[in-house]
Image (cartoon, rainbow, N blue to C red; front, top):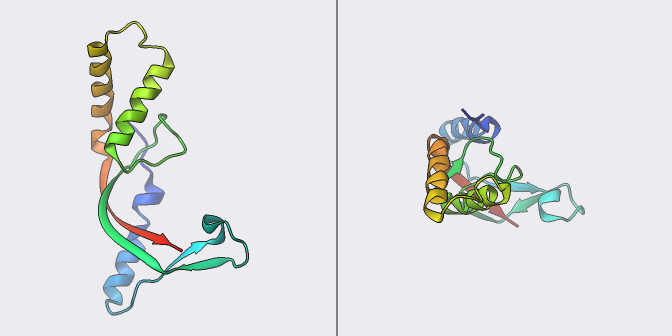
Length: 122
């Protein structure tokens, strides 16, 4: 139903291959100068790396097109606000509106993908 965000979840294939082929090499992360808002150098080393398992909503969505969600509660809150702002459900009771939200959330359930995060800070 929704289009997957393939550029995000498939990028790890190369990383997995490199780790398998070079298991003794350390992982070093660098971030683009635009990330740290400093154009003195083109790339910055990220001295702090955090690795963890989490989830992302792996599909395009209209709730907030500028965001890739990694928290189901935040997505639900933003979805509720999005639906309220649409004006389409103004005549519903709270219980009826909650059912609409639950139905919309169910549509997204198959798109929550388990991922390994590599969080880099400078």
